[in-house]
Amino acid sequence: MKKSILSIISVLFILALFACSSNEEEAEESNESEDTNASEENTEEERTLEHASGEVTIPANPERILAPYLEDSLVALGEEPVAQWAIGESKLDYLQDDLEDVPTIEWDLPLEETLNQEPDLIIFNSPSSLQNGTYEEYEQIAPTYVYEDEVNSNWRDQLTQMGEILNKQDEAEEVLSSFDDKVEEVKANTAEAIGDESVAFVWTLGEEFYLFESTRYGAEVLYDEVGLTQPELVEGLEQEEQWNPISLEKLGELDAEHVFLIGEETEAGFEILDDSSVWQSIPAVENDQVYEMNQPSHWTIDGAIAHEMTLDAVNEALTE
Picture 1 (cartoon, rainbow, N blue to C red):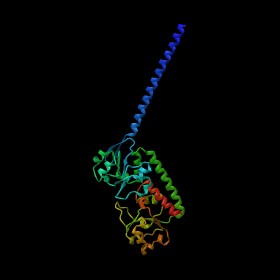
Picture 2: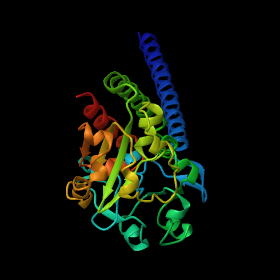
Picture 3: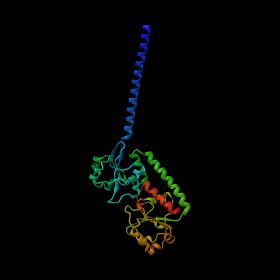
Picture 4: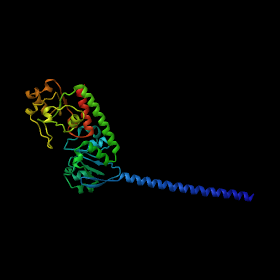
C-alpha cells in the first residue's frame, strides 16, 4: 500500500514539474512574441525620411500636427491639426465643418506661437515657407518636415507624400481613387449636358478680376481631366507664378458659352460687371449661362477636398 501511495505521489510530482516547465516555456514564448511585436511597432512608428532640409525622424503616431496650408491633405487623411493656417481673420473657410474648433496660427508660423501649440510634428509646404525662423529653430520645437517645391506644386503628389509622412499610404491611395471616380462621374454628366460648349472661370476680388488658366487650381482638373472645353481667350493665357488681374476690357473678349463667376456676394466686382456693357455682350451673359459661386475658398486652393467641392459645384450647375 505504501508503495502504491509513493508511486502516485511520484507521478503527481512529475506531472507538476512538467506543467511548470510547460508554463515557463509558454511564458518565454509569450515574452519573446511581445518583444518581437514591440520591435516591429517601433520600426513602423519611427521612420526617417528625406526632405527639402535634410532628414527627419517622424515620431510615433503624432497627435499634435502643425501643417499650415496643408490642412486639406490632413483632413482628407482623417487627421485634425493642432492649429490651422490663417492670415489675420482669414482661414480656409471650406474646411471649417471639420476645423471649426481648431485654433488658428499665423501663416508664417511665428516661433513663439509655434512653441505655444506644443506640436509633436511640424510640416512646411516649401522651403520658402520658413519666414520667421531657421529650420534648426523649428527642429528644436518638434521634428520638422519641409516639402520639396516640385512635390508641393502637384496636389496629388502632395497628398501622396502626406500619406508617407503620416504612415497612411493606403488612405492616400483610397482618397485619390475616390477622387478619380468623381472625375469620371462629372465627365460623363457634363459631356451629356453641354457637349463641347466652352466654359470659363472668373474670380472677382474687390474691384479686380482673375481668369483661371488651364493649369490654375481646380481649372486644371476641369479642363484636363473632366475635359471641359476652353474658350480661345483662356487657351491663349500663360500661367505666371504671380496671378495677375485681367482688365475689364480684356474680359470683354471672353468667348465662353458658360461662365462661373466666383466671389463673395459683397464683392464690388459683381456690381461692376452688372453695369458693364462690355461684360453684358459676351455669349455666356447674353444666353443667361453665368453661374455665381459665392463660396470662393475652395476654388483658389489645390487639394483633394477643395477640388471635389469644385467638381460638385460645376456638375450641379451644368446638369440641373
